[in-house]
Image (tube, rainbow, N blue to C red; front, top):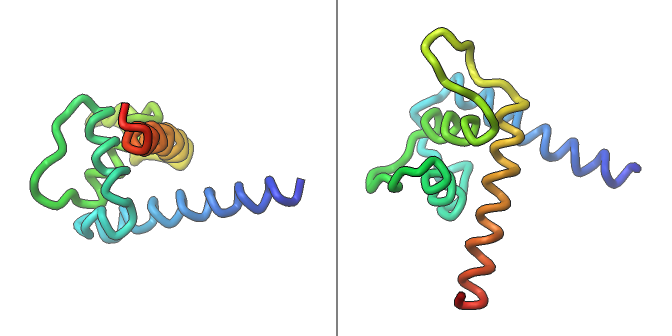
Length: 106
């Protein structure tokens, strides 16, 4: 049980850190917090071609949260930790799939 709690604390810390930085410093480059595969998979899962220029943190976080169910309408409030956490999990699964495809050359 303690091992599970330790892992959940690390995940919660990352989610809350991203939420705070996304609100305070939205123009930071996303590649400071996400690796290249995470950025690429997030854009592809959003059914869009990854941009050539650097993705900003706020834009990346909105894409990730949309994978977790955040709708992003004008009247909606800011994204929350639940949608961001679910989006990070789904994004991580797609990165794992991409790495497996590269490894086995499928």
